[in-house]
Image (cartoon, rainbow, N blue to C red; front, side, top):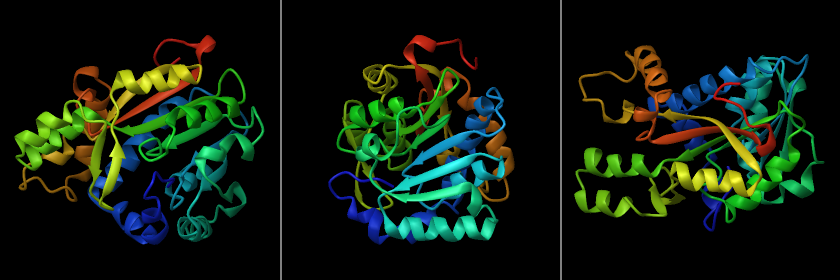
Length: 272
């Protein structure tokens, strides 16, 4: 993960993040984001795609991409995260497909040549970097050609409103979150930038990127009653979340939003 002011949380607690990814909530965030990504990868038939996973952390997503035959460069500023990613790739037997590189997303333009990648993942990074516009501009520069895409996953402000009201029962916090720029990051106890569809599209526009599609991630899973087992019912929840996340009226209130984009002059209809 890449950090904002208190980025040392990602340096010292890498194993805490790895453990989170094994929880139903963490699995859902990862599984839904990857399933959405696969919808668009299938439309880009190339013998071998090259992907950049910004702030790729433990390497969980990089391994999934590698298993599809994609060459992946995982960039992360945390040596502890990269150690976990190295073990993850080794255990999965895909080390030849994954290159690990230590560095910060803010320095992306200095780390890779323009036009280097077919796919760039920017998942839960913009919440923590100092300048989201600069990161996305650098990512746009690194996209290879007319079929290259960027997948952006961010924390959704509307989801924070529902979280405060439904989970915490804090109506004052819910009202405050209606206009809040920052939310509380519960795993590490720090802050996380909140986005709306309009604010994220403004970031994309500043980078000369045009949105292809948007999806909701974790629309209702966080609010299910205790009698619904998140573990035993995981597959059923996943299927339902996929259906809800593709419908704008439900995606609007998801905990996270995922956006797919490419260069502005290449804009197409959803899924094209």
